[in-house]
Image (cartoon, rainbow, N blue to C red; front, side, top):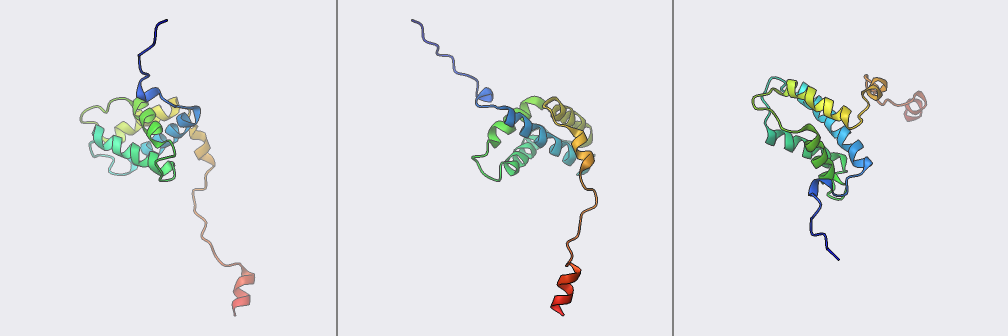
Length: 130
């Protein structure tokens, strides 16, 4: 009887459909950040990895137990290498395409509120305070 000694690659361990969904959301967020914050600045692989890790950590509830490592690895693997000398704005297109490849639905953003609501006291509350 032969034993299998080949270890599964770390990037494939415990990756679920939920991780794919979360990685897609992280990449969509990262694409937005790249396109809007210093869009003409050149991005490198370390900066991109840190940005993906930070967004994954935030999405996991700022906890190391939320699957953020798997989400980060999956997101980085899906995007691939960061080309040398690419601007943040140009690279954001690649990141957005990777988010779509993981199943991110951009049309869901069409229904979000664009104008924030400002909480104000109700008229009844204002009268009672007088």
